[in-house]
Length: 198
Figure (cartoon, rainbow, N blue to C red):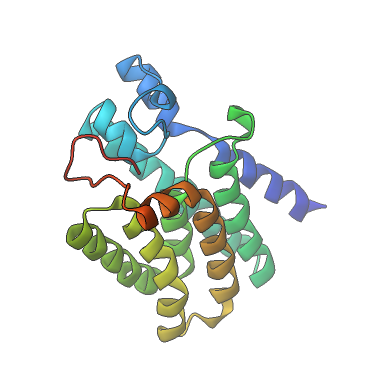
């Protein structure tokens, strides 16, 4: 029962739409109606300002990171910690505060992965940034990050959470379905252009 309540609270925490809250509070805009119409840090930075996008990025990472660290402190269960990560990412993607809609979960995923396997995550983030730099596509970098994570988990000896990493990878790919179609058709916009979409 305690575990169920905990996972419910994590889902609610993951649901907190920091991108929407910050944009409306400081810029009086709704990111769902601007740019890529996404509540993530990338769109907030472009439509509201870099400093606000950075704040959203940090908050979304923290809401993935801190609950995992609490789960480690109060439970040694690999299953509970893994489910905690899934609940946080799913909450961000399918927010109860946004009627089941939400962001694409990448920043929250980074927070979860940092708590699960910090060294492996640093490598995965490095791959992500390299892909973004080389291709200009934020979405492709995000997909590279979650694809690389299970491998970096494996190579750094974090075997216990590879299944969680694979499941979260599946969720992120699912939420990037439109981006994947645009990438395959050559219609995805680059961050080097003013009108890119994540």
